[in-house]
Length: 167
Image (tube, rainbow, N blue to C red; front, side):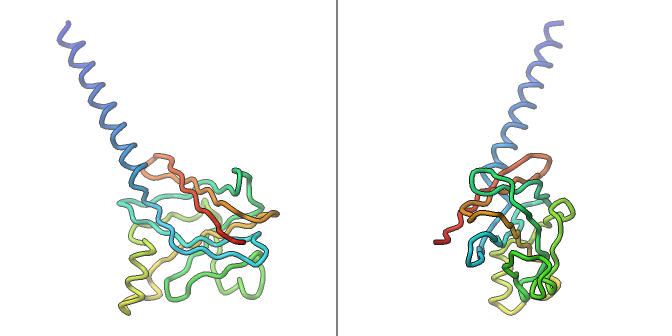
């Protein structure tokens, strides 16, 4: 009977160490990579270019601004590195109509969409309209200083904070 208890305890300890190690590894090696940041003149709208440098897809689950306030609106732009992103505080404007804005819960951020990798493709002339690029556009009723991105990766909730240096 003591052997069964010992085996159970050791098995549970190994499981806890593996799960804990995996979580710590994922938190220290974030798959979400940001590279570009643009904002409107008022600073009330921000677009953050981002992508996935990880091993699996992830889903953006929540966005907050400044002191974790809920923004007026946040959408993900689906684009490609040749087209780029639009910075707007009006998703219905004529300029914005040429871009694809989608609700957060409707987009899965695919692996292999790292902005660094896409920039390399642009620089060496191999980028195409088939390459996927993502931009997070956030609108708020006050000037945005910080964008907080919460996302799910392999069932683990991770966070990314992007500082906006508008003057």
